[in-house]
Image 1 (tube, rainbow, N blue to C red):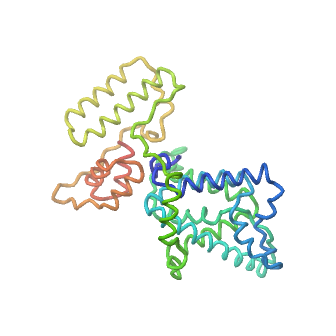
Image 2: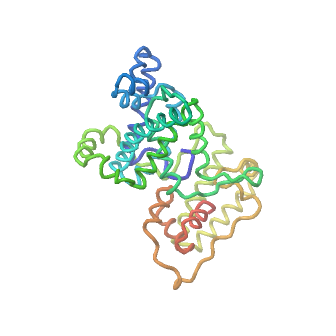
Image 3: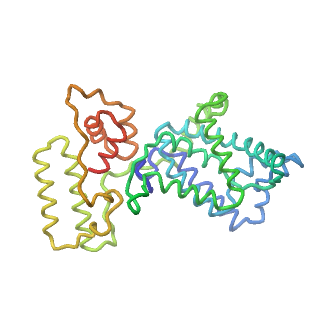
Length: 353
């Protein structure tokens, strides 16, 4: 959506699609139509302690009661769909379920600690499945490569993960007590991701449940495979449409360069020369795309290519990581070969070429 960590759409992400549709629809329903029943879904920890309403630990973490929280959470969940593609729907759902349970326990421990240490009484926390959303920042920070996209004022680096953290910060500052839900989510995500106390062996989705859900819900939540070529904008002017067509042709020539480098390179140089000779305004010179920002001075040199004898075998795990970022397998293999299996160098090479 707003990073380069995966292809567009919800292909091979049925759990993510369900998390986007169902909680959003229920939140709108209880916010607009059934607002008189919102009290049943308050995350009221005081009622849990004083009146032993343990059911609120479940209901208070099922439904969002704030549309701003719903919107930010949906943006983050959509961006975190890469983990469902990488680990599979069952393991991804197990992570969400495990962190959802752990965050409920951590919430109780944190509020009790605040009450006894700082004399701060916390009665009601923000409602909704916020714990798993914040918990997903743990694998996002540890396993997604950080790739610089551009720079602001020549010093502040903007990476492929910056906007995700900005949305997370927006969600964190939406309510005064959201920091407690954030902290409990991060703690539960760290516990589950590192398998501390062997929580993964206790909190998981059984195989039979995953099979039944796949059989019943797969036809409804399955997504179509994304097309390789993006369509041109319908509202674009003629100049913009020509520019997009030339960009698309250049990208196709670059992808074909792996198999036939010499003639394709000649065609690519001819295409760029033709573009420069046209009487159209080169808007990319003034408003460069994210992928081409920071390259105005001089095109970066490709990474040094070691001799074939020095190159080791290409790691399939790193190839899978690059493919999850949206690159083709051929481009990922070539980039890893020329970078001697350096993942960061290969990612930068693919983004810059």
